[in-house]
Length: 231
Image 1 (tube, rainbow, N blue to C red):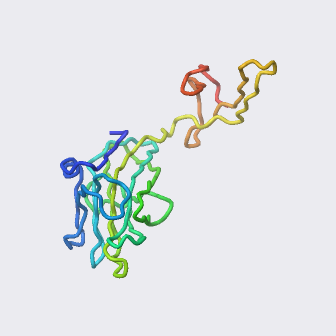
Image 2: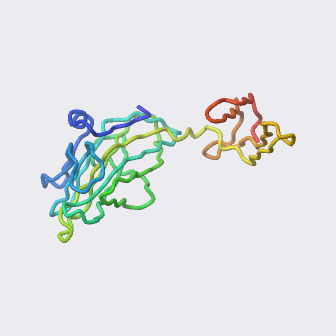
Image 3: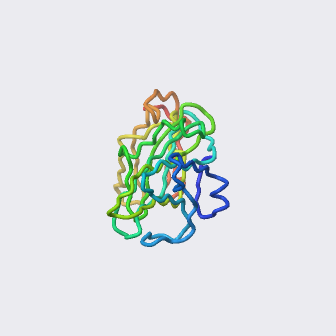
């Protein structure tokens, strides 16, 4: 369910939550890794994929996660890549989503801004916004596709953690516009706030009603407007 988080810091949990597929049958594939490896800058458990002589074609597939249609989701995963010599070397992978756990079903690749994401040995967060067509259970799959570089030595892909949050429902209001604040002319600790209420939904559709708009300061509710007219 959402919000979803897996810290990949427990081997028993890892083995129960993920399916590993060694698609090129070379016995070099994803596994749980519980110790700090040379050069990696974070002490924690992780999913680990070691490169092989004939390259990688290895899948790490999650248990099903319940998702809803007409909703954007935000996936963040913290990853690193590297090798025994600690030189900077790009590890290469893709992330897919499917409503089936079979490798052949993973045809929808998440967009991270590059066709193939490359990472070095310092942990970094990779982000993607995605949606699904229908309500149901979906699987996230990490696909290691790198080729061993003989000059750099063996390299790894390390997944430290992954989380998925709801970004926004398609039918939610878009942002307000024309925001301005005018300080009180007499010096009182007050201000006048002007803005235009949204007239469209998050995805650009027509917004028929707004049940309310709340204004907060430092997390404290200051003012509420009810039944606001769109636009």
